[in-house]
Image (tube, rainbow, N blue to C red; front, top):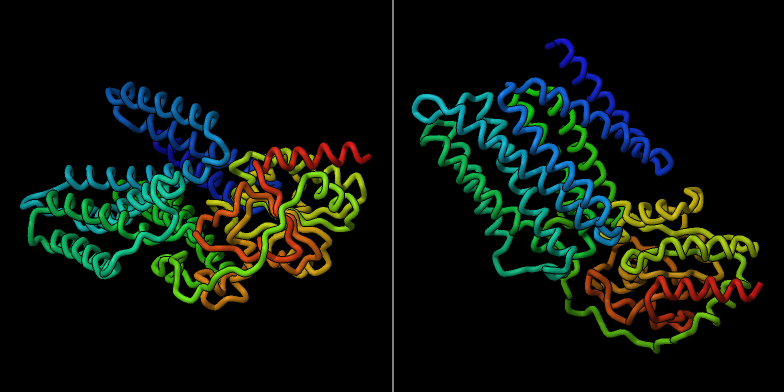
Length: 460
């Protein structure tokens, strides 16, 4: 039985690695997700078999209830709420790792309240980062759900307070390791301080940096899971956690570089805070109608569609695909410009467009599409605000100055689909909306795109 369990762990680990590899490309992402899920099913099945029989029924009940809840949530959650769901699930992972470590530490306490070093060191590490990930993910969820403001929530001495809380948690952990006090109360203290740190840590993160913070918290959850593997002497948990931690860390660094910002700046600078000298916007807004935009699109040679969170909110990805197909039928070169942090989570726009079966070869990342805007007749911006803001290049007083954006203002004409002139999630005004060559088509994005499709049909 032991050899069978080891073989199952090895198979699960291989499936995890293959799954991660296939997730690198949209065309193979579904298969990668399936392989990773199969690996997790194998790991859970053989994990249950290793548990004493009298616990099996209780664990089976918990598994069944959790699986049912997960299946229901996966079916009813809207694509617009996917970032919140990712943040929430990530937080549950960090919290679970911290709870497992805490329980093991409480039961492994020896004479005088001391813990074996092989349990204490990874245990306190798990408690710290797992609790930070749990609390931070809850704050991220609240911001994405708009229960909290998407703007940075700052107060005087905030970073100093964070440092004091972190040092206090580290001091409590070191005191337990040195045997200066019984480990159980110090473990509980570390967990409490880490939860507080997680809340304080994410509060100053602005909306535009939310994809970065979600990715970073995901990496913390992975590291917490890997450390829990050392606590439980589980090689499979170490491998799985290390994969999540490493991939999350790499993704966080890639996204930070894509925004031309250091990771430290993204996590601690309070991106999105209104700064003095940002200036007032000059110009007049030019409203338009669906028939005018349809005519403009129909007689264009190249059109670039830039999706944003507004498309996600309106659930307009199927209509956008229909619009692109109609234009392609008319001989128009249609491409999609994708900003790495468009939406509320890494790859948010790619997920939505994949759901609508938009061909992968029509998706252009920012580095590839930016040189093409100067040769583009019309850019159709669907609910994207911060990632198309030219102030990032032209206004040193803007809070987003220096952030790489899609250079849609270089196109011959720009059409922006929005509900109103309100700012984006970062709370920064966009001068693009007041440019002479920009037309504003107001309304629900789904209804507006459907109207464009209808106009194109009638024009045939």
